[in-house]
Image 1 (cartoon, rainbow over the protein chains, first blue to last red):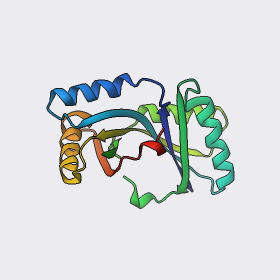
Image 2: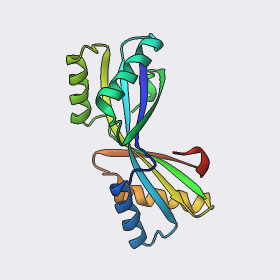
Image 3: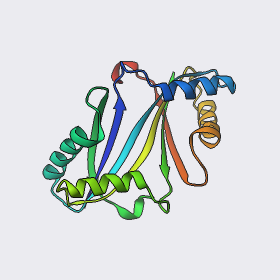
Image 4: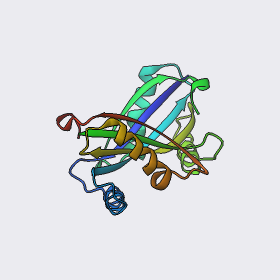
Length: 88
Length: 88
């Protein structure tokens, strides 16, 4: 079994209002050394398949068609063996 | 300058309805080898400080007080040098 670790991030050129709000809150709390915050999605997807090539193609398709907005977001991923006992 | 890479995940015992919805959608689309999907937050926070110990303490405090809900979520993080040219 395989696990896809998928990051869906806003493009660098796109404003992240949620991250900006966190940065402002932290400045108000006194954490003035926080320069910037960017908030992204991190998705772990487990597959019954052991075929990396097939899973990789599926993840590409899933990111393009479901998880990421190609206008504003970019994605990256890695495929790793699913080690059930080490995850929580 | 340092970058904190922070993951805020639902506890393994907590149902992830958004992830469940994605899994169901994928099954309907024919991706029947998708076993489970868990959706988490991935936060990159840049600090002007170069003091790893100080930044680490700040990140702990920020996670506990702002980013994670201790009832339902767990967090993990790593502190790395901020390499501006390699990030997008």
